[in-house]
Amino acid sequence: MKEKLLEIEKQEQVRILLAVESGSRAWGFASPDSDFDIRFIYVRKQADYLRLDAVPDVIEWQLDDVLDINGWDLRKTLTQFYRGNAGIFEWANSPVVYRKTALWDWIYERVKAYFSKKAAVYHYYGTAKTTFQKFLQGERVSYKKYFYALRPLLACRYIEEYKTAPPVLFSELLKMDLQEDVRRGIEELLQVKKATGEKEEGLHVPVVWDFIQGELKRQEEIVEQMTDDRVRNWDILNEVFLEVLERV
Image (tube, rainbow, N blue to C red; front, side):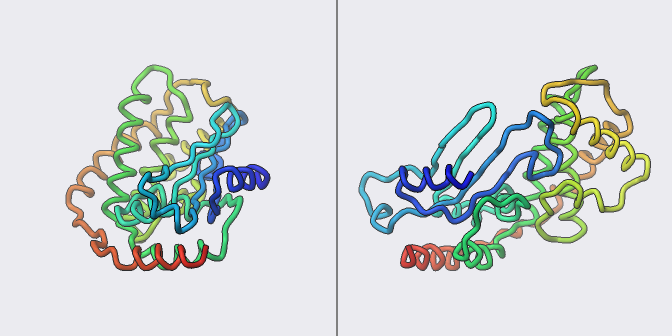
């Protein structure tokens, strides 16, 4: 992975500030044949941001059966922090780190105040609802999809309880209070998921399915009642952007 990052920097003429795992391997429930979802944040030279022909703000480097490598420009990244994008907070807190610079640590310390509880809950609730409706209605289902609904719902619960960004690892989310039969069902399903292929299907696990359905209803009511807590001031983000450009 280090060689890939150096290759990207050389060919794209950028500096990579952060590179992490963002998919099931970061969440802690990868299947034997899971690919690597690598996400990175980069910054260009100051002159590139002053061009009339704007340079792309995304680098899509590789997508195949093994590697999915995608990067965001710092300007785009800071804009997403402003919007309270839950995904960018997951990148910042990923437990699987391929590169993290001191400059990125400085950036994140300044911008993490832009975490929005409502924006995050809305994101996680929407992800779980879409997964449930599209992939968990048949007689046989992908166990992978169970966790694409379970993890965001547990993230919503974590935000509800702790008022902060949820941990990325699924095992950390499972430490919250759950009914014993639900916890046992999830843990048993997790062991099956880790041992089977990405596309393998099986019968429903009723206790887990019922939990997902019930939690979706509960979180829908919660998110509708939450007040908009996004920070509406660009000052810190603009200061960070300008200072980073002076350093590169």
